[in-house]
Amino acid sequence: MSQLQGRSQHRGSSATIDVVTDAKGHEAAGTSRDDEAASGAAEVGTAQADLTAWWSHRHRDVSGGWLRPTVFGAVDGLVTNAALIAGVGGGGASAHSTVLTGLAGLVAGAFSMGTGEYVSVTNQNELVNAEVAVEQRMHAEFPAAEQAELAETFRGYGADADTAAKMAAAVSADPALALRVHTREELGVDPHELPSAFLAGGASLVAFSVGALLPLLPYLVGAPSLLAAMVITAVALVLGGTVVGRLTGRPPVQSAARQLILGAVAVAVTFAVGRIIGHPVS
Ligand SMILES: [Zn+2]
Image 1 (tube, rainbow, N blue to C red):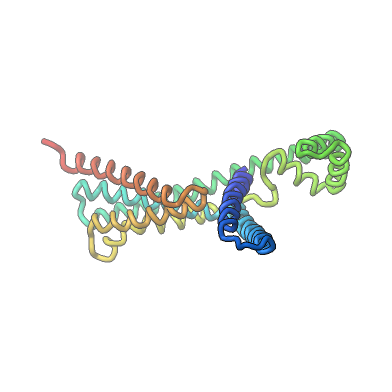
Image 2: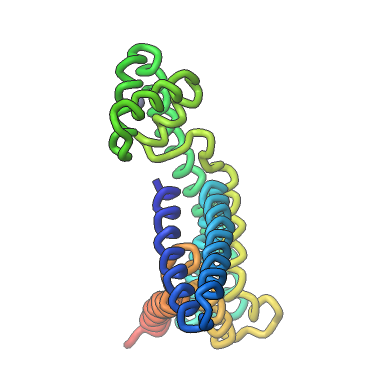
């Protein structure tokens, strides 16, 4: 399902780029109509080449199943540990206690994220496989009904009854292909391109660890400074937010600002909690 969303989102943004280049091309076009036509054709060619490049890029990212958990895992690790360090730092913990807390937070969070992602993807894949099995049984028991269903799908795409019937017959002639097309149409996923749970879980675990390590760096290199930890966190949040923006199709600046603000809120709240509990008002 997410694959389809990614594709259609991308189609939308490409169309926008196309219009923009077209408008620019028009302004810059010379006096000759031939020039205009030639540059227009060249631009369409470039736009199509760009579209193809982006299309395959998107597809690989989503179906590979590791880029998303990597980026989100890293941002999670960063925010979690920055907040944790700010909390114990706000409570007046020593540098040693802060490192201990930070490393414990890193390991606990990394395993929680990694196993969570693994279980989530496994459940999702098992659900898809179970539904594919149902579809396979229906194909074996009611081939005519399934072929009619497929013809109906093709009519929904604008084919006339005769063409739709021919296409459905052609696809149904190959049982493996038929199952694949039905699954894509009915479940919105390709059973041959399910994400690897192990890869997604592993990527999450490693990414969370890397993100969580960043705010700890000043303490690990023997320069314990809460301020330095927070500056590193802020810079990393802006970078992470930019990448998240690129992944989700939001404007990167907006996404970076949002990531920074949400991270700052998490850090401020835990810092305040640390202050209140660490230095009780007597
Ligand atoms: Zn079906």
